[in-house]
Structure formats: C-alpha cells, structure tokens
Image (cartoon, rainbow over all chains, first blue to last red; front, side):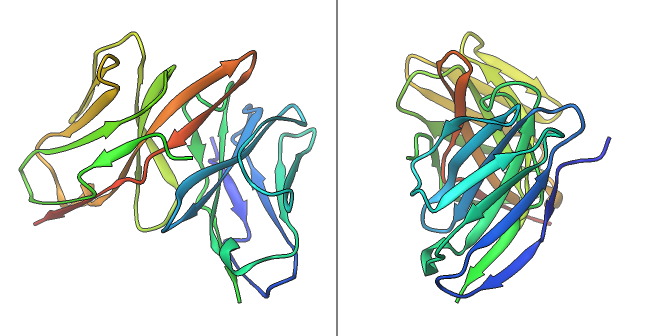
Length: 113
Length: 114
C-alpha cells in the first residue's frame, strides 16, 4: 500500500503571497489531518477533514483553510503569508477519528521570505 | 496548545543502553501514542496505549500509562544508533460525537552513540 504523499516537498514564497499544499492519503483512509511544525511551537493541529467536511479545527487564523475532495485527497491553503508561517506542514491520514493512529506524509517545508 | 510535556528534552546514550522518556499531560485522554521523527521528516507511529491500559509492549518498546498521575513513559531497550531521532508523545483527546484530535508534546531528542 502506498503511503501518504505530499506535494510539493519544498516551497519558497514571499510575504503576502498565498500557497496551496496537497496531500494524498493512504487508500481507504477517509480522515486527513494537517499539522504545522515549528521549532518554537512544536507540532500544532490545524484541522481535520472527513468525507469532504471539516470535522475539527485547531486554533489558527482564518488565513489557514483547507478542503477535501471526493477521493479523500486534501489541500490546505495559506493566504497572505507571514514570516511566521515558515514551517514544516505535515499531513496525516487515518481510517477513523483524528485521535486514532495517524499515518504521516513526509511534509512540505515552507519558507516565507 | 501543548498538552504533553516530554522529559528530558534531550538524551544521549551509548548503543546497547536503555532509553527512557517520560510524558506528562493535563486533561482526560482517550489514548496516548508515541511517534518517532527523523531529522525533520514525517512522523512514524510507534505504539498506542488506551486509557484503560497500563502497559504495552512492541518489540524493544515498552510503554506505561498512569492516568491517575497523567503520565506515560516510553522505554527503548538495547538502543541502536538507528534509534537516534526525536520522540513525541501525543494524547488522543475526544470531544464527543466524531470529534477528537491528537495533541503533541515538544519531543525528546534521543542520540544513540555507536
């Protein structure tokens, strides 16, 4: 079974731009969660999608949004990028709830200049 | 918000020694999980222990959970250089219905010297 894939792996953007990251979950997994990882704040939960609906959301500003497609693939979008958005963005999938065992992708390293 | 706090933040040992990492948390949990991350890459799930379990084993890993003290420990026996990584505890918090998510601690950096 193929693992969770994320594209692109690396991104460099400038302040004020927007960015879209993509995640393909493991086949059969309907839950997709997104996390932001920074040295200062660690791993923080962004949101979770299940069957194309946002089921749970972390404490991030509205500039961070996401969606899920009927094939369970998910995208997250960050608008009006700030320097502090530089981070490793991790996607994870699971069969059921976002608190179950998560299977993580390799991440997208976003650098905002 | 961080719920899990790992201790120590960094641990350096020799190959063959045992490594013990601790995790404390604040709220009620459904489960507690441990993950490993190598050099800023994706996380790998190691083990999940449910709130009604006290101990679990998987290969060289042993996890304990004490819900009265809101703490857990991960023991890696006979460490190898390949175990060098960051280890995170994650608490599975259930909010009701189909809502729940994992809250991660900041991790323990383990270095195993050959």
